Length: 310
Ligand SMILES: [Zn+2]
Image (cartoon, rainbow, N blue to C red):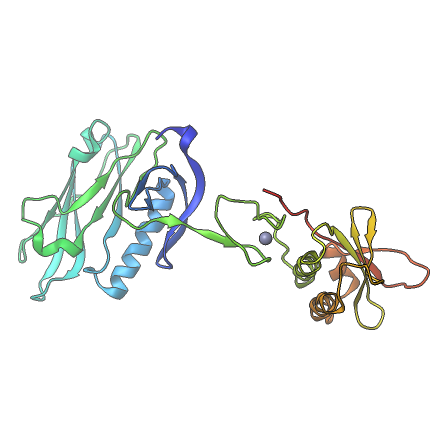
């Protein structure tokens, strides 16, 4: 996978799997689905989740991801993996044969995954050795159980790419970008970190007051897109008393002003709801700036992120 073409993002399959961190080549699509590359640590999480789903919903419903750890100098090992029962109630089991000495040369050939016939006794031999740690990653396709012949590979082995990542489910699973939701209401793919409203994914306001300031700003901007801040008087009921575009005040008072009382009123309502029980410390934490003023000792400035034009 060429580094230039890849992006760091998060992927998921509906609400079932993920979101997981992954590298993705956005142009490598299979029926519109992604082929994400995961670190081994992420593959372990993915493995645990597939086993959890198979336990709950049945193995004919879920392919399961497996990681077996060993050493480059280990003798061959054999692992028995249980996968529920078949239609006749017989246990479904696969034997995984790992030839560790050839794991670096040919990971795919080094791993054999075979159906175990009911009643067969199998001896498990764990990996040994003290050399470099190695891992094998594979998926067992329980859903095709009845179609898999005894001598056939009963799963898919994934080789690490040159960064040691595994493209589990590439060109077969329905991986999509995971998303994030901005407080303005817009949804973006995980790697699209800047929302058109001007906020970023990692710079989302967390407190009710911070969120209210953003929403009040968006409300004012429906009529004055150039607005960048507003003064709010908290004496009695909170009220937006001035709106600014940079240093210039936008008229809110006469017949030519861009605001109607309804829009100002709904901005006030958003702020009032968030101000219930708010302390001066809460205001400061949310980025509300105290403005000394001879007429009011409770005047604050709220600032809106600059909207993006692209
Ligand atoms: Zn936004």
